[in-house]
Structures are given as C-alpha cells and as structure tokens.
Image 1 (tube, rainbow, N blue to C red):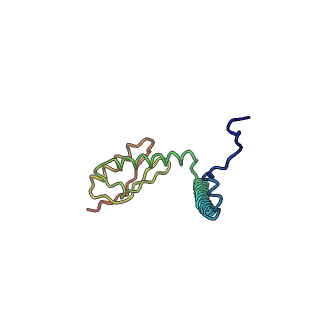
Image 2 (tube, helix red, strand yellow):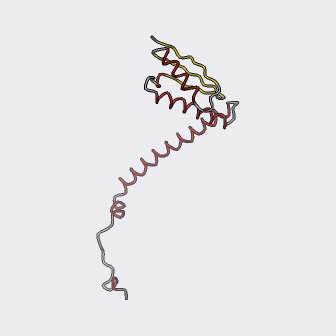
Image 3 (tube, rainbow, N blue to C red):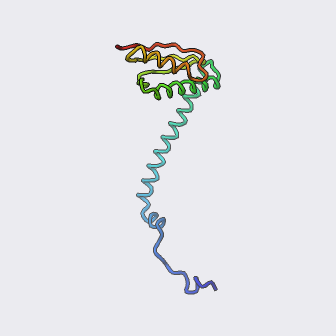
Length: 136
C-alpha cells in the first residue's frame, strides 16, 4: 500500500478554489462583470476593423498605397515631434499617394520652412503642400 494512503484519506483544509465555490454569488458577479467588459472590448475591436475596412473599400488607392501613405504620415509626424523648434501638435499631416499636406498654425515663417523641410525629407514623399498659417 502507498504510505500516504496508509491511514486513509484525511480531510484537509479546502483549497482556495473550493472556498470560492462555497460562496458562488461574488464569484458569479466578478465573472459576469469581466465578461461584460471583454464583450464590449470585442465589439469595439470588430467595429474598428469594420470601419478600417470601410475606409479601404471607399478609397481608390490600394491597401498597399494606403499603408505607405500612413507610414509617410507617421514619419513626417515623428520628424515634427523631434524638432525642438516646432509644436508638432499644432500641425496636421495628411498624405495621399505620397503627397503630404501640412495644415495648422506656426509662430514664424522659419517654423513653416522647417516643417516643410522635415516633410520633404521623409522617405517616399513625392511632394509637399503647405497650408500652414503663420500666426505672428
């Protein structure tokens, strides 16, 4: 006979899971809250994917070109953020077929020129159109 079973099975203190199951109401409430929260998250993710698919479906650019344009926009925005002389949050960057449009406000014409230079420097840019307004 196995030595551990020699004296028979003895009741020991129930484990944490068994203790939780003795009081199922709090456990059920937590489980319900978590599933409701995750259900909303899944709907958001599915809705977001559907919205992204809608944009691709309504745009005459290929999905590859849309991705390239998004990469250019991100590259230009990163350059603007990295520039100490510019407030990148006041400059909107749009890219369409490699053509970048800058919109927003800057304080000086030197800042406008710097933003345009940074946009032209980004990989894949075909042209830059500046609609930046000098406020001072």
